[in-house]
View 1 (spheres, rainbow, N blue to C red):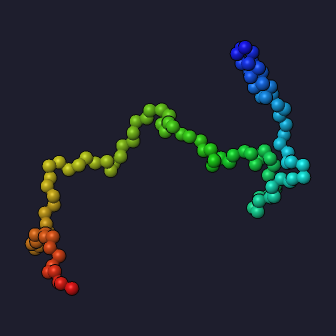
View 2 (view 1 turned 90 degrees about the horizontal axis):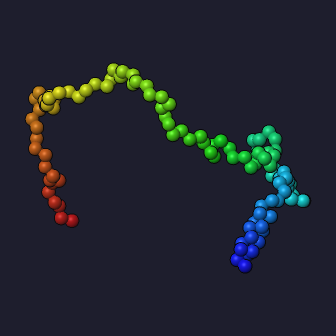
View 3 (view 1 turned 180 degrees about the horizontal axis):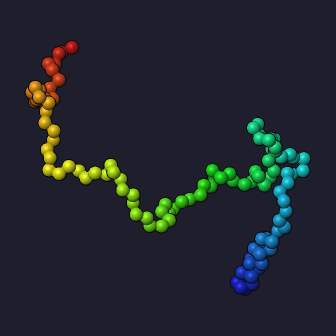
Length: 107
């Protein structure tokens, strides 16, 4: 009995999927959308159903198609070796830094 029910459900599913396919048309008494303000013509139903290119951009997963040696970069210099920070300018005395903001004045 369960096989016959399963066969009946499969038959109903197959019959439901074989509908006729026709061009889309507006319902009787209805019209297509009006022409957009900057468009030259009224879009057809196929144009209205087609997604614009910015809605589905092409995906680029591989940026390099083939292995290539890198070009020499004249500004890619190694860091200086073993040098210290530059000295203070002549004539300046470094002052110690403190966190004090000044005297507290009661209000």
